Length: 201
Image 1 (cartoon, rainbow, N blue to C red):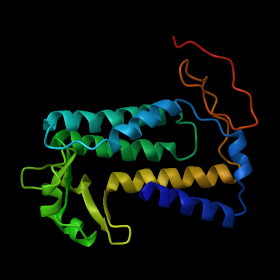
Image 2 (image 1 turned 45 degrees about the vertical axis):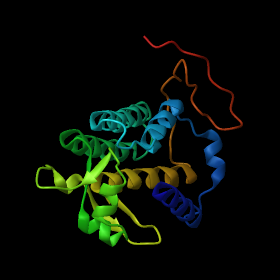
Image 3 (image 1 turned 90 degrees about the horizontal axis):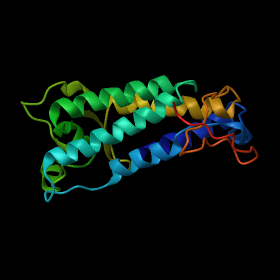
Image 4 (image 1 turned 135 degrees about the horizontal axis):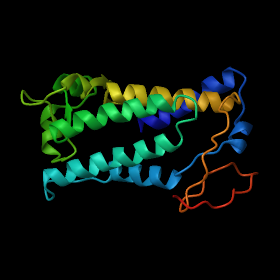
């Protein structure tokens, strides 16, 4: 997965800049469970046995959950970039009933338009003349061995994640002061006790 590569490179940059993993022990993040559900929705394969609107709703729902997670943690460095990237992807998926994928970008990634159509996926489709906001679609092909196609929104999102990881390693993440959610306690690092539970108003 490309995001794992991005995070791995971010760790390398953080170490090269003199950072340390110890700072993650004091790092607080809220609504981590919401983020996990959002990622799970993106990973669930949907085939032709399911109607296309359901696939679109599942994909849009994942972005709503991830956007909510980013919003409650917006005080962290570069999370605003994550929110921008999520918003761009959400818009292009919403107006096109799925993420349009450029055929030329697929070729760069070592795939083909016929292959994408043959998979029967309901979350992505080959870009056609009826699609709008196509520059925001999956138009950036990354050749093998990575072999993926990503969007401008993905690039911005990954940049935000990378900057956040490096900032944490350098001890510049600051304090994420929002009270933990009632159902998903904020992760505060292995040496810190969970804060008191708060009810949402």
